[in-house]
Each structure stands twice: as C-alpha cells, then as structure tokens.
Image (cartoon, rainbow, N blue to C red; front, side, top):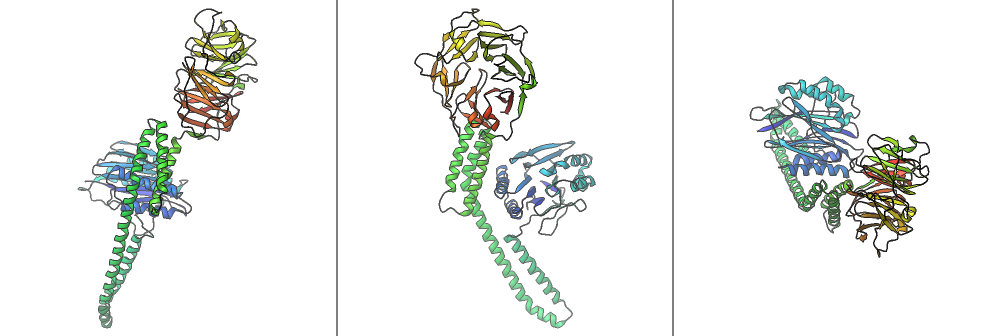
Length: 628
C-alpha cells in the first residue's frame, strides 16, 4: 500500500499569525496552513483541527466539502487563510489549494501542477512510488526557487532533508511574512517495504511548534486545546502520574510506607478507572452528538450544495443562465435560514452556505464598479485642439470626427497608431460610419473614402432633403442609412448604383408611431436599433418595430442612452452617462455586464471591438478603455 511520508518547515509564529501542518490519524490526509487574525486565530485553528482530524473523507467530494467548510468558516470569522492539502485514496491522490500552490517531482520532471487564489481548487490523479509533492502557502512563493534547486540536486532517499538546507532556512528567516510562510515535502513510499514514520519530528507539546532557521524541521501535530479531547488527555496524564508515584512508593525501603501505599493503591485505582470511564462516556456522548449534528447539517445542505455545483459548472458555459440559477438558490437558502425553531448549529451552517453562494454570485453578477478608468488615448497628442464629436469602430480601428475642424482621425487599436485621413476639404461634416474597406461621411452630400488609398473622398450621393437634414449615418452591406429627425424617418441609399441622384427608400414603414426626435443614436446590423432619451431601446425589422425587452438588469435604463453594435458583433453596448455606466446586453436583451466609473458621466458615445475584448468611451479629446 502506498503511503505518505513528510517533513515541513514553517516560520516563527507571532501574536496574530502562524503556519503549520495538520495530519489525520490515518496518515492519509495532510494539510499545510497559514492563518492571520487579530482575534479569532486560535478559535479557528481549533475548529479546523477538529474537522480535519475527526472527519475521514472517502472520496474527492467529501474531501472538497471538508476543506470548503474550513474556507467558509475562515470567511465568517474574518480569518485570512492559506490552505494546501493532500489526501490519498488507495492508488489515487487528490490535491487541494486555497491561496497556495502544489508542485510535483516525478522522476526528473519538476513543476507546479496546482495553484489557487480566490477559490478552493482540487486536482485528482494517480499516485506513484517516489512521487514528491511540495506544498507552499501563499507567502512561501518566494521560497519556490530555492526548493526547486534543492530538489533537483537531492537523491531520492534523502529528498525530505531538503527542508534542512541552509539556503532554504536563510530564505525563510528573511521572508517578509515569516509567520505565514510554510513549506511541506511529501514523499510517496510503499508501506510494505518502507516503515518510515510519517513525520520526521514529533513534539509532545500540545501547543503548535514552529521551525526557525536555527532549529530542527518540525511538523505541527493536531492540537485540540480547549476541547473535551484535551480534557481527557490531561485527566489520563494526571492519573498516570499519580499511579507512577504510588507504584514507586510500593518499592520504598521504608516498610511503613510500603504497607500504607498497598492499602491506598486500590482506592487510587478505583478513582482512576472511574475517571477514565466518565471521561470516555462523555467523549462518546459528545462524538455521537457531533455526528448527529453533522448528519443533520449534511442532509439539510446537500440539496443546496448539489445545486451550487451545478451553478458553478453552468457558469463556465452560460453566465446569464447561471446568474438566474444562483439568484433562485440564494432565495431558497434565505427561506431555509429563516425557518422557525431551527437549531443554532444548523442555522449557522445554512448562513455559511448562503454567504458562499452570495460571494460566488457577486463574482458572476456582471456588476463592476471601477475606481479608475484608464485613458486609452488622448487625441490632443495628434493635434492640440482636436475635439471629437462622433466616433465609430471596425474590428481593429477607431474613427473620430472633429466636426468643428472637419477632420477625421483613424487610430489603430492594437498599435495605438493615429492617422489624420486625407479626405479633402469640406464645409460641413456631421456624421461618419466605416467598415473594413470604406469610410463614409455626411455633409453636403454622402462621401466615401477608401481606407487603403490616398485619394480624397468621392461623392456617392448628391444632397437631397434627407441628406440635408440628416444627423446620423448607418451602414449595412452596400446600403447607407440616414436618420432625419425633421422628416421623421430613416432613408436608405444604395451605394452601388453609381447614380449620384439615386432616390432613397423611406425605410420605416407608415403607422409605426416612432418619434425620431427622441432618438439619441441608432445602429444597424440587419435590424435597426434605436436608443431613446427615455432609456428605451427599440428594435425595427424590415421597417417595423418588433418586441424587444431588456432582462436581468438590477437597475433599468431611465435616462438618455446611446448604443453601438455592428453586423459581426454578438452584443449591444449601451452608454448611460447619467448613471456613469456602460452596459453590455446580448441581442436577445439579456444583461451580461455593467461597468461603472465616474468618468463615464461626461462620455458622449461608446464603441467596442469584440476581438480585442475592449469597449471605448469618448469624452471630448479623451478615449477611455473598458476591459470586457
């Protein structure tokens, strides 16, 4: 049978911080920990030792649930925790990490195989003889290079002595968070051939012992200070000491003493065994009660935990659906926590599960408030008085219009390379739109500029009434769309008919009842999307309004908004300046993400590049970058 042998090195503890190792009595489970708390450290450590030494997981799920309880309890008790563990089942091993990492040395190969920060992560695999697992607390990352070097030099039979290396102890002594720094080396051996003890050093003290650079490498044995187990051990120890003294008196040379002690020894033995029986009975009662409570907790929480695991899995595939499932689970747990006549221990466990689900929901809620919004580009670096009034984007380029100076600037997103386009001189430019080949703009006519060329823009449509009164341009395939609030319609022009006097099509069909004076912006991807001053989004297909509802938002739009999308895009990008936010919706109206920042209050438009996973908000001469 394969077993683990191990040695550990941990830093010197202080009043509020410590690290150490907890080993299950079966020697199949080893956990390296580091804790930091001004008030609750001892209480939390006692809880973890009780859980990890009395529970015996039989599979990966039970091991995960055991460690997850410790992580959740740390959150409730406001204890900063780093936890790394190993558990073996026959010829399989399960590794776990929370704010820590695990390395594996197998043969000549050595490298990190598991690392976790904000969540508890597990990894399952097959165990082999002579495997070496190295556990690091989060603060021990600075020791990884030293441990790696020593492991590569060490022979298999002396690999655990790496913890005695002078370089490692020196590095530990100089670590910034020495008390939170811990390293544990575990070697896989065949117990039929190798009867080496699990720990290299066993200390009899009930208090945790730490290793310093000048002392022997030690392992913290499970301590149950303050528990009924400690009381039992202390009672047995005192009774044994008394018996030892009594026996010594029996062999005294003083005959009177011997006779007196023979008479009293029977009384002492009766008292001793009575105390032992009482303590054992109390311990059995306490253990049975603990098991009953744990079984009740497990029976109550298991349905919720199964749902929670399903939500976690679903979140990797469909965040929107996972968010809705998580909201339903939170509601169910809240109802469970409010049940009357519920035992305190059960209510505490339900509240802990509820807190964990809430924290996970927050991580997928899509609600993000940024203290700082980075400036992607300052247009004044190109021209000191460049002030953009309009913006458009393709997959890799941003386009800015300064309508006052009648200039258009192109900015490559990846390289941040700006270019003032040589479009020519025009008395009026009011709007622009672009695709991968052409840039179109609206002035005294509709003009087209070839992006790969150097010639000035050419006229594609003479000015007619829609063009003269138009305020906004849209582009889909070969068609240009001009929104005219004065004529309360959107007019479509065919750019491929080679006629400068082509008659446009009034695209919005009669009887739709849409007041275009309330439109803030519009975008086209085959359908036409209108954003209104009331915060409403309207969708038109073939010139007729179709139903469109926004769902999943905590705070609906209620003030003027602008939106952006393109035919190749999956989502709608909506700017609501009065609420200082950019909201991402899919084209079915489901909420995906919200980014808030005070700088967005002054923004006038938003565009996005989905291949770059970025959105860009325009505010005068500044372009803000938003990670999606």
